[in-house]
Image (cartoon, rainbow, N blue to C red):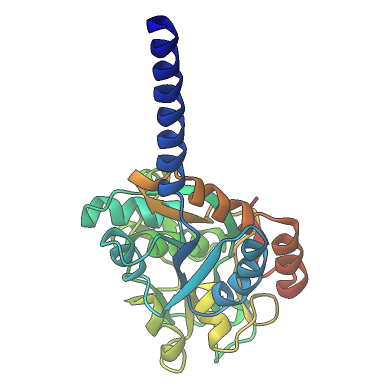
Amino acid sequence: MHTNFRRRTLALATLAAALLAGNTAFAQDKNTLKVGVSVGNGEQIFEVVKKVAAKDGLNIQVVVFNDYQLPNAALASGDLDANAFQHQPFLDNQNKARGFDIVPVGLTITAPLGFYSRKIKSIDQLPDGASVGIQNDPSNGNRALLLLQSAGLITLKPEAVKNNNATPLDVVTNPKKLKLVALDAAQLPRSLDDLTIASINNDYAEKAGLSLNKDAVIKESPKSPYANLIAVRRADKDKPWAKRLVAAYQSPEVKSFIETQFKGSLVPAF
């Protein structure tokens, strides 16, 4: 009798532990997420992501940002569960400069960078002494300078190219004597009337009515290494909801929408 009692007690304890483990796993998951995205194409894509996620019982609340400096701060402070707006070099720079502990959990799109102009139709028309706008954040500024170098307009110090940290101070030849003007990424579209050409990120270009395929006088290859990503706080990287969010984004429905809607100006990176 005593042995049977002990067996029943052990079985109940085992069942309770299993139920507790299940409840703990469930508690770690969540069915409503706040995700930060950038204005423009990020909003459009996440309308499709939301529909796909809803089929899995995941409710995504999209929070739209007009400034690249804000979404990581909002994520780090807990105001967001995830964000989807940046590439790895930008995230690395923000983690280092601002002390964030944010990590990628899945790739989204590659948004080729372009230089745009209201004054010239082709880069061959670029005059000597032209004013050239580039982003003032380290990762996108470096990216813009690399694009200028690929077009044969400047050359950069090899070490800066290797380390992906080029700045205007790393320009070693500038035969056209271009005047490099570093501005906040969001200001560049509004400054086109004052600049000869300007490097503009895809989301801001789209908001300004500019098309990479039709309007850019220089543009990156679609195989650019600057793939955007979904990011979360490090403590959340293995949570079930993070995997569900990535699965919703990397679904066939979202891939088809990107390819159909953007026709090469955005490319699925998954």
